[in-house]
Every structure is written in structure tokens, then in C-alpha cells.
Amino acid sequence: MAVIEISPHSGEHCESTALLNMLRNHDIELSEPLIFGLGQGLSFLYWHSKQMPSPFLAGRVKPDHLMRNVADALSLELRAQETSSPAKAEATLIEALDEGDVVGLKLDRYHLDYARENHHFAAHYVACIGYEDDRFVVVETRSLGVQSTSRESMARARSAKGPMSSRHLSVRVNPSGYDESILAKACRASILAAAQDFLSPPITNMGFKGIAKAGSLMRGWHDKLDRPVEAMSAVGTSMEEGGTGGGLFRTLWAQFLEEAHELTGVEAYDELAVEYRRIAKRWTDVANLLRDADDAGARRSLDDAASIVSSLAAEERTAMARLEEASR
Image (cartoon, rainbow, N blue to C red; front, side, top):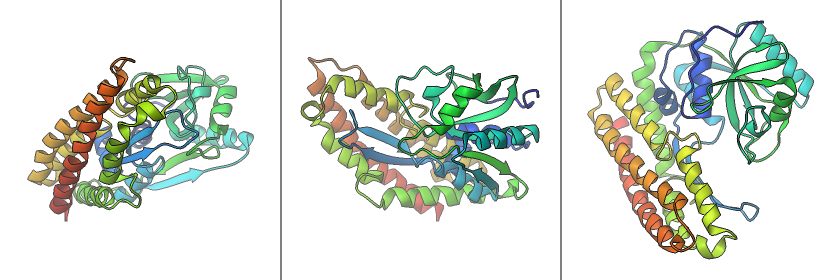
């Protein structure tokens, strides 16, 4: 078959990019920041287990939740399928493509033909838009665009195991319940939910408490990590270039708040979009301090980065409290 005829969009983040292309195939045109915001995308998680060579600072909700949240907000039906059988997974994908559906696939990009990664991450999303001969065609994020990969590599990628992985997960969308008139109401509800989760996290590693914890622990990385400079570089690069849109997803959130202001007329959203652009720049400063450090200056860089992160905990708590109040 030929590739499905859409104008493919390569965005900043993998899950929002996949859903954007799935919706575009049904003539629903939403921006990536709007999808990210409706998905209650902004969050924070600090995680560092003994098996991890470096800590992990996440700025978004868990994988899979963004799509689910958007579907709930816009009355879309998500048709998610999982299987332990690679053959069944491929047959289901081909059937959906033959029916003209763009399909969201969760996988480990490390195994795909075009991958540049030297690490595994089994919670990556792509939008599959067709197949040609013995290869599948997918839409990736901005740095990669439209790519093709062999059936064998696709099977390996979809079968990958690891943290946050799924069993050959594929997602289709049914837009029959969508009504554009609810966008303004959906924006307010999504901002309120994201703010409440951020302000009342279930554990101290998440939300504003997680940011404060990261700031507290960061100064000790130099003595606790086996290769501190290498680990710092990995963390900083992930924060800025790991599909975050820059500023640990805060830039995407600021762009969403600008659109939410246009849709709702809530002035606080416009004011807080400015604040989140400033906050995003502060996270970029942290990322640069971490990834530009050398052996001689690592301790100083960690101290400077930790000071910024500690202040960001209070700043983001205040910003989210204002968003919560404005969205009630």
C-alpha cells in the first residue's frame, strides 16, 4: 500500500507528536502545545535507583497518560491493543493501516534502523503512517522527521522490555465524539487537574516537592555517582534535548497557556505563560550548567544548578497555585 496521505507533523515530544498525527488523519487540527496541555502534560519526577548510572529528572506526566487525558478531555475514543505475540501485533498494525488509520506505536527506538541512540528507552512513541514493500513508515519528532524501518527492526523495537514498556502497544483514535466547542472548557479542566496533581503529589519525588528534593540531593551527586561529570552531562542533555521542547517541557506549557488564554479569555493564563517562559529559561540554565561542567568545575556547577532548582520549587508552586485558582 501507499503511505497514508496526511501532512506529517514532527513535533517536540514523541507522545504528543504521535497523537497530533493520529488526529490530523481525521481532519482534527490541534497544535502540539494544545495537545500537551489538554493531556495535563506538565509534571515533575525525580528518580534515582541503585541500578541507574545517573538520576532521572522528568518534566511530564507518565507515558501513556497524556493520550488518555486528551481523549478524556475531548471525548475521543482511544482503541489501545496489546499482545505478547509479535506476529499478531504486526498483523493488527497492517490491518489498521489498510483501513486508513494512522497508528500510535509504543516502542524502543534503539532497535530501529535509523536510530542514533546508545541507550534503551522502551516508552517512546511514533506515528505509523503506512508500509512500503518490507518497511514501515513512521513520523518521528523534529530531529528525525519521517523515517522508514524494516519489519524485523520494528518487531524488535515493539517487543522491547524495560521500565515503562508495554506489550506491542498500538493505539488508534475514534474521533466521533469530538466537538470543537468544548475546547475552552477542556483547557480550564485540564489546567486545574494538572495544577492539583502538581501541588498535591502522591510522593515527595513528584510535583513541587520533587523539585525541592532534586535541589537538595543534587549537591551530593559529585560524591555519590561513579562518573559524576558523565552523569551530569547525560542529565542535562536529557532535560534540554530529550523531546522536552526545551526548559524541561516548560516552554511547551507556556505555549499551551497562550492558546488557552485565546480560547478562554482568562487573563491569568496569559500572565502565567510569561512566567513559565521565564521558568523554562531557568531550567535551561540548569541543564547547561550540568552538561557543560568539567572535572575541575563540577562541584561549583552542581552548587549553582542546585541553587536554581531549589528556588524553582517555590516559583513553580506559586505559579501552579495561581493556575489552580484561575481555573476553578
